[in-house]
Image: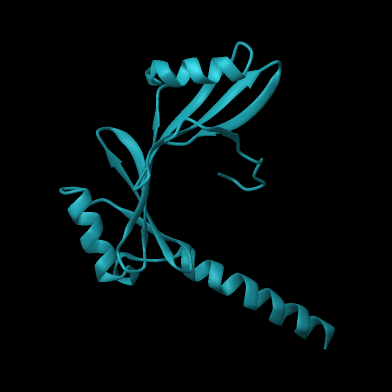
Length: 151
């Protein structure tokens, strides 16, 4: 009986995760596919994944870079992310980070575009500490908590 309960709980947890991970283009709501095609015309090689129960994520290549774009179930565009070379971080962003962190070394940079504007997620090393920070469209810096997943 105990094994049955453990198996049932395991099944209840794992099954939805597997269903999300195994999404196909046919599973993606038409409104989401149309919105994606309007925003990224000509992009056809797309990997779709259900990010959350109410959000779809598209992963694709554009201009020889990896992108991800998120959409609500109704097709509303939520955000687009792509990595940039650390040498391409805008000088205003470098100056802003340097004003808050001592001699930052930029390890990784992502541009995040959303209806609110453009923001940046940066991995830096400062004072022997590795940090992930985000700079919002208003230039406000916040530290991103460490994640315990494979991202």
